[in-house]
Image (tube, rainbow, N blue to C red):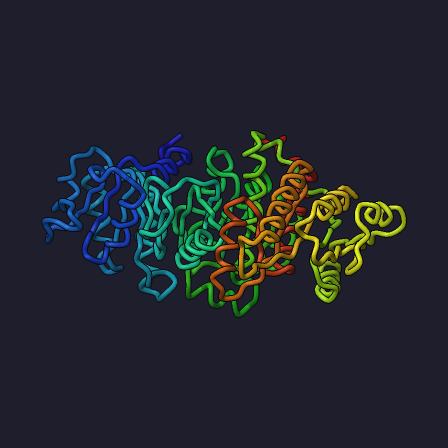
Length: 494
C-alpha cells in the first residue's frame, strides 16, 4: 500500500498533526495562527514561511521551507492567491516532504476557465509518483481538530464527539460557532473541503467510522468533483457501512440550487431520485436544507448519546427510541390543543388517557382546574409531590417522548419555583432511568431571567428547544436512526 492510499496515516496527519506550517504567512494569517494557538498546539512546532518577513505574531518566520528544522511537515496551510499557487507548490514539493496541504484560495474551478486550468495542474502534480501529499480544498477554510488546529480563534478547544465534513467553509464555521453558543456542542474533528480535487467526503467518512473520539457525524454535501468519476459509487458504498449516526444535508436539491453549486465549489450535483434511493438503502439520516435543522438534530443526538456514555454504557449499548407515543405536559388548554395538532401532523401519537389510566391519575390527585388526559394540564400544582407522582405514572403508560412546556418567573428563587425545579430534576432522573426522552420547551424572548433559567436547565443536563415543532422533528430523526440501526444491523458490520 502506498502512502497515498494509506488513509489512516494521511488523515492522522491532517487531524492530529505533529507539525504545522503556514506558507505565505502574513498579517492576513492571523485567523489561522490565532486558532492554532488557542487550541494549545505546541508553538515550537508551528512554522511560518515568508521570505519577506522576520517575525509575525511573536513567532519566527522562515525564509523557505528548507530552513524549517523538520524532516517533514504534517499539515501545511497555503494562504497565497491563485496566481501563485502552481509555482509555490513546485517550490514546496522540491524542498520537503509534506503529508497534507490545505489550499485556502478560492476563485478556481468554481470561478472561471483559468481557475479550472490551475486546478487541473494541481491535480497532475498530486498524481506524480514522487509526491505523496494529500490535499484539502482548494476554496475552503480547512481543518478544525481540538487540541491541534483551527482556523478561528473562538472555536472551542475542548474535545467532543461530533465530527463535521462540509463543502462550505462559512457553513462549517457557523455550525461550530452556533453549536457552541446555543447548545454547548463539542467536536472531535471538522473539515471544510471545498472543491474536493483530492480528499473526498468518502475518505473522511471512512476514517471517522473507525475513529474512537467520534460518535456523531454531520455532513454538508454539494456535489462531486470532475477529477473523481467513481466517487459517487464509493460514497454510496461507504454510507451503507457507517456504524455511527450520519446526519446528511445536501445543498443543491433544486435545479436552481445546483446552478448555485457550480459557482460555489464547482462540483456536480446529482438528481433527487438518486439521493432518495441512497437514503432508503443506507442508515444515514436526511436533513432538510437548513442549518437550523442540522443544529437541532445534532443537538439531540449529542445529548442522547452522551447520556448513555455518562451511565457507563458502551456505544453499541445505546438504546434508541422504539416508538412514537408522546406525553405533553403544560398548564394551558389552548397550548395543549395546538401541541396535539402539531404532534399528530408531524407523525407522533398522543394517547388519550381515559378509563383505568385516567382513574389511576385521579386517585393520585383529582385536580379542580385543568386536565389529566393527554396533554396533562396541571396549573398551580407544579411544586407539589402529587404533580411528580402524576407525571411519573403517566410516563409509565407506554410513553416514548415527554414534552414539557416551561417558562421563567420574576423570582427564580421563590419557594414555588424552587419546588417546581426540584420536581423537574426528579422527572428527568425518572425519565433517564426508563431510557425515554424528555424535552423541555422554553420559548425564546429577550429577558435576563429567561437566560438565567435556560442556563440552569442546560447546566443540569436538560434538553431544551424553543418550540415544539423543532423538538419533534429532532426526535423523529433520533427514532428514525434507531429504526435504521436495527434494519441495517449497523453494529454487526466491521
